Image (cartoon, rainbow, N blue to C red; front, side, top):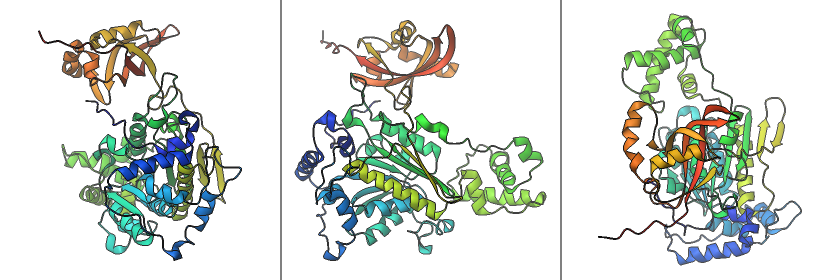
Length: 493
């Protein structure tokens, strides 16, 4: 069921900075409005604004100079003033996702850049192998939550900053939780996790009648990633710059081993580990799902991989390698994390303050042989199913789902037959397999307006057979449905 978002949520600071032409307000005016709203509302933490100690002046000297002086490279909306850092720290909320190698650096850099309201999410616990590069952790912290320990360490070293840890999976949070932040900074090591957060942030995006993004609904993201001596940082402004799905082809496919090699002729430690993970687990643990985040499951795979390696005379199987192969973890380099984190923190500061023009839009670093840095301005996919506007279809509130599916065949912009319809991950009607068709068949007679939760404008996805240039092929389309008349009031007899 669709949940109506609270339109009275705090102004989206980052979007206002880059959308001056749409809103007609300068940073100073926007900040004044935000301060007035915050002062009217009771504090959630009850804490008072901390006083800056005299000896801390040197810590903020360079940041204050950056924010207090105009220049030729600043954004057109930038308004330099001495207290801008303090206002950013007080009223901008930042969410950091990931408290590992890159996440530790991000928390430190953001706190030392003047951000004081930070939340961090990470589901992992600290392991001994983390200590060589995740500098916020100590031996005594092994087994504890990464998010909780990292938050505590940064708050101990940087006075006035409040970091709220969340020891959980990103999927465990309600979608509206992510809408409470002005900007999201990613320090993830997983394509799946990036894709999920990207879809959440783009889910808040709304388009106006002119097909342009509505400024208040854009959720800015800064994404960082490292892989050995290589790393990247990029700015994602949904609806303006490419989102994660627009450029997902940048990520190379994961290495897959033929099952025949794993079962018959293993030659490397990785072959032995994957044999234990993909074949032996199912043979022994019948019906039990493997959880890569369960230490007992990982230990079992490690022990079975050792037996396999000994049988074929292969050396080099270790617990850390087992984790790396199963989770597809690339060894991390501390210096790479530091460089990429610095780029991400700087872009975050530029977005919320306008003190300089933001990255356009993909920064890559390679320190394997010397130092190679490049910035590439990728183009957004206008037909992206995640951040694109989709095809606008105006409907009568009385139309049923069955009538809507028939309409898709006649619509000149869609021309889709045998369509299956989904809404925010829920199957409204599925043409196949037969069991899903039977489960969703009862929805065909219901009004689409009701199935969407009574929302006048919303987004749905349809899949089926589309005709293009006289040829039919399977396709997936994003549609923006708009009910063009008020729903008639039903009177009691």
